[in-house]
Image 1 (tube, helix red, strand yellow):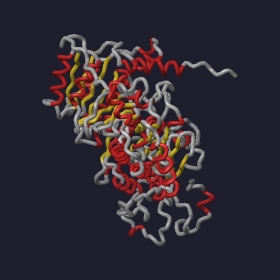
Image 2 (image 1 turned 135 degrees about the vertical axis):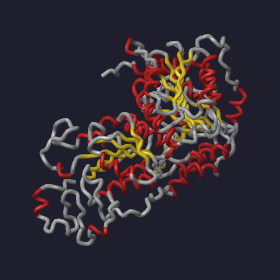
Image 3 (image 1 turned 120 degrees about the vertical axis):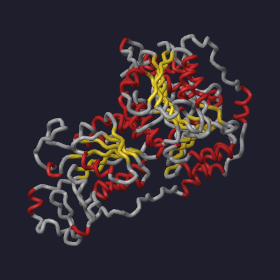
Length: 605
């Protein structure tokens, strides 16, 4: 990758006329056959990258400027159709790209070398865990500094520029260090295509002195970006379908459960097609909420063991066969490893693999192809759904209270439920909002997102920014705890600059409630802020913003009415004051089980 080592340059005469000869100072390497006058002045590396981002559907990049990425940012914002969203810090820029990718299918962020890269890496790790294609672009050192013994600013004081790269290697599926123009086109295209194919983040470092240089490979209208389609092994697909159909058709009361990897496999429609054909009850794992329409006639709710939808676990766990499609089983989704499932009853369908009970397993079988083929082979069996229908009792409603009594959390979410429509989307922060938002019944077309696998508190502020930016026709309703909000509050400012109209419910209960229920201690109590006052200060008279602080149901109703009517074109921030011990019953149960899992003693040596 080094392009400026003296011995190499001295051996290349003339310097830029031989294929494969390293270029000097990042300049074009084939000048004899492509005279500078033949290369358009806007055929630069920076514009090529910008063009590719627009081509794959990115209209906004989330950035924090730094001296290594400033020229690159100039070229990105010069691209028609690409808007730069300046964020308050790198962590939120990464969370915003995460939220953007959830709605649009891909997101992008731009930061500076090392100080920016290591600040954003937590958000990139979260995107990796959630299978989101995020293009993380870093402005890197000048090409002349590679291969020298120089120490640069923004580093840890060593003449080794690979620290940032090595950190990103474990949380991205591809890393491109672009410090010469010879292979820059190839590296950028390979990185972007890998992100889309693997549905994981990638890392692209671009030397700060390359972005503005024209080069013959960066023609203004490059060949359109395309991906070779992935195909199932036809023999493997047929064998997997045949074995699965035999397994399920002999079952008495089979069920279907959707997992979060339906998204990465682009198999949501195929899952519904299978559900229509087979008549099984349809449940979703908590991290798959929103991927399957809850209006489906056989939808029975969220399967989350003891803390899922009432009667759902009983139907799933009593089945004699269950088809799990794209599941992730971890300590959180299994409620401290307490799910009552048996491997010999399970068929696990991953994006490119099918495993039946304790075997056999079939590789190179794409989930979408498998589900579509299976729909044609299964017999309709509604036994388990009929059992569910017999035992089902409709949800109760919260106990009535005096309109001026202290507000309860279940009353809050009772009113949030009424706000939902096809024109809204819900963002649930890590904490008790996980459990309260799971109980919301999503109208058709209503979006829903939360970060279950990584569970990084504070994620929702940046994610709300990114998600709202990607779907301006929807109004985002974010439910955020006070502890999480304190981590990432600054980018309320960016929401205002972008003229977003989200509604944020800040649930002020004085601490990290989810952690209290796992293991209590004084460290779970936080300093109370005047949250509405803080947002008013950030607003500072610029942009459309409205805040309210509510203590009782009467005030809540008034605030919601105003936010959805008179202030419908404003960013609305509603601080909800609740008792510190007011939690969902599901959090109490879940916290106890996760605590038990965390506190298991070491196995005897």
